[in-house]
Image (cartoon, rainbow, N blue to C red):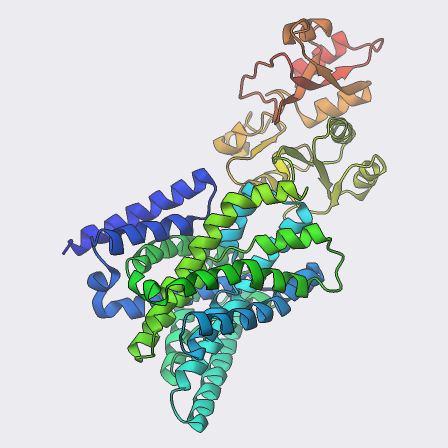
Amino acid sequence: MLDPTLALVAVGLLSISCQFIAHKVKLPAILFLLLAGIIIGPVTGTFTADGLFGDLLFPIVSLAVAIILFEGALTLKFSDISGHGNMVRNLCSTGVFVTWIVVTPIAYYFLDIPLGLAALLGAIITVTGPTVIVPMLRTVRPSSKIGNILRWEGIVIDPIGALLAVLVFEFILTQQDALTHTLLAFGQTILSGLLIGGLTGYLLGLSLRHKLIPHYLQNTATLTLMLAGFAFSNALAHESGLLTVTVAGMILANMKNVDVSDILEFKETLSVLLISGLFILLATRMDFSAIQAVGMGAVVVVIVVMFIARPAAVFASALGTNLSLKEKLLLSWIAPRGIVAAAVSALFALKLEAENYPQAEVLVPMVFLIIIATVVTQSLTSAKVAEYLGLRSPEANGLFLFGGSHFSRALAVELQKNNVPVILADTNWDTVKEARMANTKTYFGNPMSEHAQRHLDLTAIGSVLILSPYRQLNPLVMMHLEHELGKEATILGLNTKESEGMTSHQVSEAYAKKLALFDAHVTYSYLASAMKRGAIVKTTALTEEFTYQNYLAQYENELIPLVYLAERKVGVFSGNKTITPKPGWRIISLILKPGVEHSSQLSKDKADA
């Protein structure tokens, strides 16, 4: 038997390695976590979760799943269901029901398992989840309409599907007794979950709203009190805790004047560590003999889930919407199962096995098989399917311009002429109106707002240029969009000269490095002054005969290179990176009009800047 300390450290190292590999190859991490666990457990027999934790395995998995469901419920705002069109609402209601009623009889007949277990399997696999959908969307790049539907379906359906699975589980667990006792126990479980969950969520919300808990304790206190509600509910009514934490999260997420963003970020960080280790350990318990026992029935169920249940759910949900046939087909193909399905199935299997429920050992390997089949198949083929259907967006080479000045609007127009996706955002209606008159895609408002999170589509955006004069707002927008788009995105701002002068007025070194957009000495006032004197934004193509040096010489260096277009890549010039343009590139630069007095004045402005 492997030393427990060494085994836990090995699980931690494997978890990080799987997450890193998934990030590099742009596939959902759950795939690599499950494969790692299968290799450790059933394949090599190095160790199993049962051997490592013994009797503690059940409570550890229970608490971990409670945290995962609570985090999922925190993302469910009722306004999201109505705020993203009929299709999202229908997929999370009609679609869930259709998937459940299609899969349940198929699983019952072909797997030859009890009807209750088949219904539980059908309920569990209604869930997709953002943790598997989001990485896939980055790779597939479907049209923004389809991308938004899939993304919000994953977010909203997560707690709804989990809630359905919990209710089905509670029913089949009490079903083994007399009918009267079954209904009584089921009612007690539901009532306990709703009351304690509602009370826990409401009291937590009140304490956060009125700042009764110190800020540095909010995350820890929320986690502890949520787990306390889970344990108390279980003690009051057998296995009602999962319903409790789901309801508590939903109540907390929908209370007015309660900011759960910090708590959600903490839970997400905790969930990454928890989920990574949990799935490796759960996969070590895989019993392939259970799948072999049902034979081809398992394959039939997987095929029905992917090729019948999902399309039926999509087409039923699309009734009354304006989705085209191609859009329905793409939605029908992309529905990978993920974290919640794996975690909930593992927990339910443990509980059912403890209750000696017949064939409970089939549940986990069957769910894991569906997860692996959907993730692998759809990850490898969805991009091709989207391309074939004409619903694949170009690479994320678009530019997001924050600030609607004369210069920003001119740059946006020139980018559009070169077929570069561009969004211009500002809190000033007059500048946004001017941009709209030039047919530029705009967003009026604060890019950090809750409204922006729902309506601002950044799917095609690869670079962010902070061009506004709002010195207090700029760093906040920069940090927010860096979090939204990831570290891979290019996010730069204009120099503000705040890195000079008094030490108390200087910005952080990390932020100062990003204030080198176009050139280290280019400021907002410099660009405004140049545009006022007649500068223009112009595109020039480089060739073997007309090189970058010829380009600079033609304008006597009286230009500022802004953006370069090289084959499929769109890049931004900056003062902290040397870029050598090559023949075949197109350069978008700020240039003064011929005949306008410029050399001495602009040189002086540049020196002053």
